Image 1 (cartoon, rainbow, N blue to C red):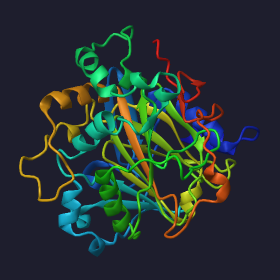
Image 2 (cartoon, rainbow, N blue to C red):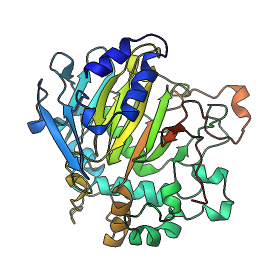
Image 3 (spheres, rainbow, N blue to C red):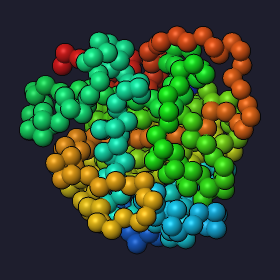
Image 4 (tube, rainbow, N blue to C red):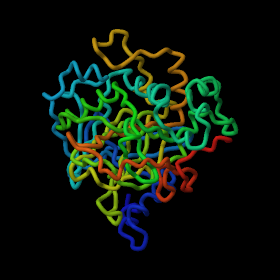
Length: 394
């Protein structure tokens, strides 16, 4: 923690970049001091820690000090228990939500999902949302007929996958991003009205409930970026500012293995705060925090020391509520998802692009098919910056 703080004060390279490199390269045993909202017993108190031990790797995360963290007040009456259950969520009155001093508008919600319901969203991200007409990084480098059914082409290979790093990767393992709704253009960094496909109704419903609980009734899920990480992946330093309406929040959902999330300031010279994100955790960036720099320098094994966190071991109950957007999945499908998640993390970020009644500027009508940037670009691997592309031969 002291080493990280000292790095944040050094001159030269901006503070955010220095700390990004620190957490990216640091040995896992030296990650003490990263905020962990899942402290034992759900208490947010100074000095608590938890230990992870998996594959001879050990690290500690400390519960956030009380002077930095406070309980966020949610709008309990805005989401009925029935609607929360239909989205696969616990009643809002049971959610554990926190804010950070110095980051107004930032809300961290500790895994509010009902038992088994995370499985639905994992399966959707791997099996359904990867289908056309949604767009993914593989479309930039493969013929259209090769990316129609990534799940169908990958499931047997994933099911048989062993522990050897020499095995060829399935197409799902080469997946880095999928866009939904208004499709983000990686070259122009804009959304356009003529590059749009229907937004998934189940994901829209989930997003509406979370936004309403955080005080944003009427939120419209119009665009989504799904990111697929492995243990050598990272997410570069960036600001989500392409949406035309910044008064609406950015919602972030995480599933699978854990990660370190860095939340910085309006300028990269401001040192970021590091925190863990575990499976099921939700982050909401709104108000002042909506346009802050942020990044994911590191993906780590989950803190329980098991192949998958226990919250993913739980199957869905057979009696789902009427009108639920959650669907039962076959054991065969879940085996494929579970194999994928043993070394991976999935993140869904949902945005409202336009305010009510707002239109795109006229110049946005030109569509340019592009790739992701390389400088602090979306994904990095093995310590080197990468374009947002997959190597279809490895």
